[in-house]
Structures are given as structure tokens and as C-alpha cells.
Image: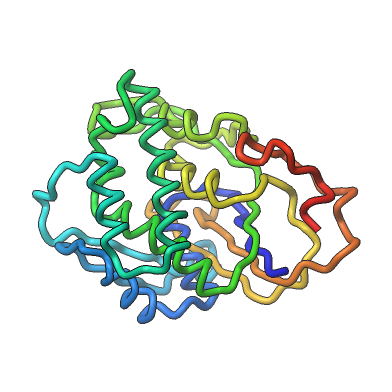
Amino acid sequence: MRIAYFDCFSGISGDMCLGALVSAGVDFALLKEQLALLPVDGYEIYWKREKRNGISCANVFVDLLETNQPERRLDDILKIIDNSGLPAEVKEKSKAVFHRLAEAEAAVHDTAPDQVHFHEVGAVDAIVDVVGTVLGLSRLGVDKVYASPLPMGKGFIRCMHGVIPSPAPATLEVLRQAPVYGAGIEGELVTPTGAALVSVLADGFIDLPALTVEKVGYGAGKKVMEHPNLLRLIVGERYPGRGSARENVHQHHHNHNQGPEDIE
């Protein structure tokens, strides 16, 4: 069984996920080609190799060429995904991530999920981040995804609604029943998109499981911080009968019946 483990020592965002996947060996040209199947334009995607605290990483950029992108609701985004020529499994997982985001935003703003206007989240870059991450994991032949517990920033962040506390209310809403901890760092470490990706795609939040390391990738966060603001992706084959007794398994609401023995 091939495992992908998101080591979120500095949080997680959509572009960090893409960077970690490219750094771990996902063919960027192929990824770009598949993303072009989405009926969305007005953006450019590219990446740069950088170093953070001496660690080589991939920094993926999604630049909007048209700043007046339409404001989209959940149904608009689901149609974009459905009308692409992407594999069915990629479509379903991508749509599940946006469902989770819409539910969280609706809870925060006291409205219905289908009435949520996706501002930051609905922008083209979020669609590219979400679908690109699902595609990248598929390209790596991953069977199961796990993630570490998530570090939360503190202070305040600026968004379309003005100044809001960090972590963003939508991020916390997405992460109900997921393990989080205060990292004592000013700013936003886990974005709503990053939270939704990991909460939907991960089978659990655990310590690093027993696996034979095959690929390691580092995705850069946009903000340069004192610590290495990176997302580490570790991919490898699970080896049976090891580690499950020592693993600290935190299940969340999608996997409430799953126990430690199920992750062999």
C-alpha cells in the first residue's frame, strides 16, 4: 500500500500542497496539461525552485491574468469540475473538498452552503490548487493519505471581510474534530483551502506511520518566516505489522469507525 503523509510542521495551504507534490516528483508539465481540462481560463500556473533555511523546495504560483473573475457559488464550481475531462475519482474528491469549504463558510456566515459566495476560495487559484492536489496524489499512485496534527497561527489576518482572527473562522470550522495545536506564530499557517484538502483527503491525523521512504517533497508557503515555512510530503510503501501500536491516531468525523488496526 502506498502512503502519502503530509507533515504539516508549518501548516498547510493549497499552493504548498502543489509545491510539495511537484518537489516529490509529480511531472509539472503533465499536471498543467490535465488542469487545462478544466473549463476555466484567465490564469497562469508556473513554479520556481527555491531554498528556505537551506532546504530546496518548490514554490508554485497561480497568477490571475484577469482580475475581474466572476464571483462563484458552490454550484458554479461543481459544474466547472463536472464539465472537465478529468477522471471520475478526481472529480468526486475535488467536489468533496469544495463541499466542505462551502459548509464551513455557511456555518461562519450563518447562511446555506449553496448561497456562499466564494471570494478567496472561489477564485480560480483555489480551483487549481484543489484539483491539482487531487491529480498530483493520483499521479503518485497513492492509496491512502495521512497528515500530522495541525499547527495554528495567532493574531489577525486580512481577508475580503476585513481583519479576522487567526486561525480564520472557516479554517476552524473545516477542522471540527481534527487535532490542532497553537504554534505561537503570528499569522496564518493553515488556510481554509489547505484545511479542507487535508480533512477530506486524509484518512486520519497521525504521527508518521511505518513506511519505506520513496519520495520526499517540500512545498513553499508564500510568506518567508524565521522557521522554514514549508509543507513536507513523504511518500512510501507501508510495511505491515510495524508502528500501529505506537502511532498516535486522531480520527475525525469522516472516519469515526476506523481504528489503528485499519491503517495497516
